[in-house]
Image 1 (cartoon, rainbow, N blue to C red):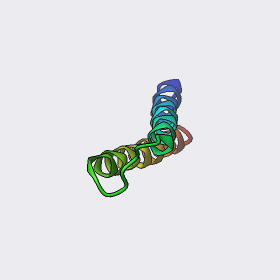
Image 2: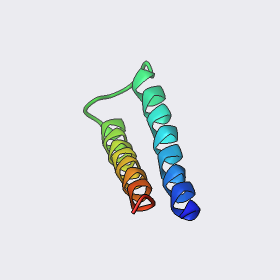
Image 3: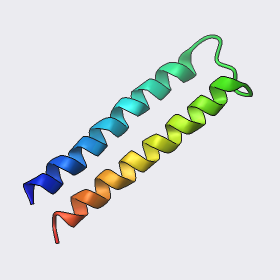
Image 4: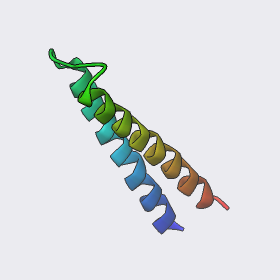
Length: 64
């Protein structure tokens, strides 16, 4: 059971790292909302959401 808890927490930690990176990218002066950076941001945001959901789902699985 503890394996699920730590595994879920790893996903949540990774989600937090991705979120912080997204904030840095969006704060950059030369951030181009329509260009290559926008595609990168979208991909990172998708990864963030996947890590967040997966971490929470694994955490819930540990309670079963």
